[in-house]
Image 1: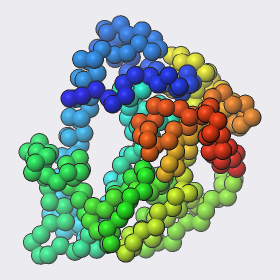
Image 2 (image 1 turned 90 degrees about the vertical axis):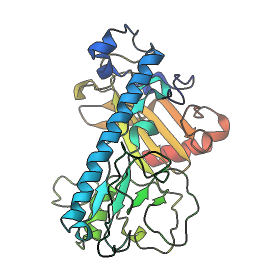
Image 3 (image 1 turned 90 degrees about the horizontal axis):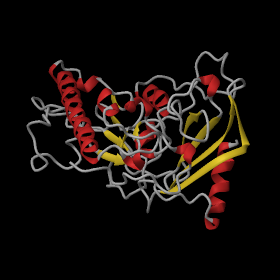
Length: 329
């Protein structure tokens, strides 16, 4: 077991961006460590314990997911069921000196997105063969399971989406293909609708309170079954997270709506992570983009962990302006 690759708080990270992991601090075993607030680090040995426990929980979840998918085969439903494996958020395990999920970094925002479509992402199995052969992660080692399949051992017939940098693709998009494209979870509604043969809901207007059915996402249906994939280098994904103030305090992670004064709006492209922290009015739900409290810009090709903030470097001023214009549209 190892520590996070970047367990220290980056020097260029704005104070408003820091997540003081107050929910973790409420645990009795963490309180017994007497860690200073807000930046005091958790002792190294305890960090290793947390990471080991988290990875053990992931292995347990892998087993449950594998058993569930294997049951689709046993019931004869694997060739009639679209499967989507995803999550609602990521989780920090010591990166940037942070824990839990309350930030705008990739480690807290990125999620797995694996989609299986019968007869499209994988060929129909031969009689007697399984679409989802169960592999128990507690019984297999990296030497006996192909690299990359152990984490989700039974979801090996789907299309994997990963919002990192584009890479070259095989001539055909087959089982286990990784699509390094920037997509959003709001795309799932439209995507599953199309894959299921339903009418894709129309795009939502700017004000959709009185619209019965619409979507803010885009269908990824064209990806499935394509002989080649063209990466949209201009694709971006949006996220946001609130803060009560610029400095870390005991409600920074989960401020009440009435206490939110700063909102962190974040954009992820294939090349950059850009976050702008601006004034926010909880009474009107309006952001004041002229009231900039702090900014972050990370070039993920050379800084995948997002430790070197380029926001105030002159040569990146054009990139900052481009992303800022996206947020203000």
